[in-house]
Image (tube, rainbow, N blue to C red; front, side, top):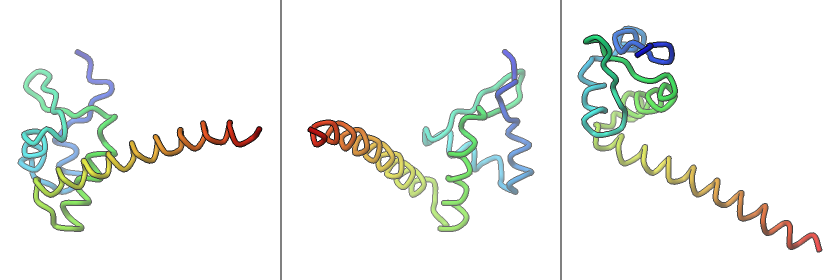
Length: 98
């Protein structure tokens, strides 16, 4: 497996000054997926923005993993609902133009 789109977990720990256990707890909660290649832990680069949000929730709001799980899922639900609202408004505007 290539590691082109993977970020070394050790680099994230050093860059963001967080413990490995933080990422392990996020993984155990199902919030992130840790990929292991040749006994080295990585996360996919597509997850970086989500991981940064989770770290901000942890540091800025002092939320534990369970709190991060709740807030993160609520934020995802809000994003989905906003997308559905935009789509509904776009469909409605087609009928209002007549």
